[in-house]
Length: 365
Image 1 (cartoon, rainbow, N blue to C red):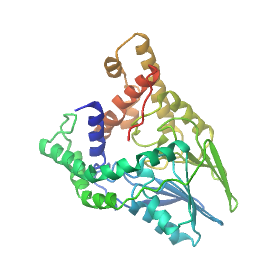
Image 2 (cartoon, rainbow, N blue to C red; image 1 turned 90 degrees about the vertical axis):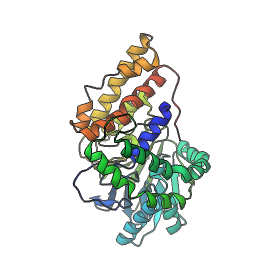
Image 3 (tube, helix red, strand yellow; image 1 turned 180 degrees about the vertical axis):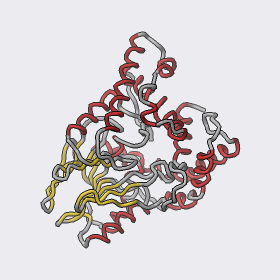
Image 4 (cartoon, rainbow, N blue to C red; image 1 turned 30 degrees about the horizontal axis):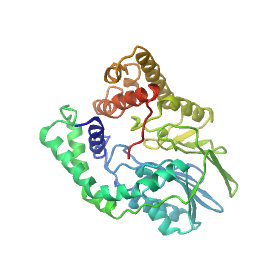
């Protein structure tokens, strides 16, 4: 199996794993809503690893309408946003801003557009173009998506080993079985999904002044993708980061490692009181952001040294030492340790090698 295919398979398995043992299982196609400031609501997935993988969402109520930041990853998630908005106000959703092109943040657009046909949908030009360029490929690929997940699940459970040859821990077996329960529903959602392409773009900064509120949408540089946008509410001191920050383990399919720490420092410099990540629980300090910054700086410094010694790619990737940061992410938890190795170790090292060697990375659909 190629490195690319192995990573894809690991991500497919990740989509069917849940992350908290012994807790009641919420509807996987619903958010848990929290009012983080008057009129500012965050939709949080209780378990960031659960199938279907869905990004968090934020919306802001104003006297002139409702502004949504990220639309969820399926029609049902978009419908849940619409339902929550309608339970709070008769004002329409007037604007949706997408943090980046990944489907778990934008495939709910069709539900919002259906409910509010005049809604303006914004994204960074890179994200808008990527969505437009890949929609046909995704619509073709969705037919085989759930069968591939089902096959990977079945193989892992039958062998009692994951795709890296590790023996499944009991919690993983339980979570894989729970994930299997929603595959039929996920397949139905995929097959009724239509791609909605954003109808407006902005490059570096857009500010909305609505009903006495100020909403800033900022592109701070390359990080999770080349088109990431954050929402900053300066009056409330709330930031929503999209997948620039994901917790409790960073999701790093193709990170722009040379710029990432700088983007994180710009977010820190905002002086936020509340941070809503793209996946994971709401944060109220900079501890996790600082951990991410430390990780990117450490890996970049190590890789620069290895490249200067003319160490070949495979050996350089294998030599990256995460011992200074790994347990700060995992706290010794076996499930999180496996996820760290799946999402961070090789992916971050490889991306850093490609960037620091001058090859560059290509975002994969």
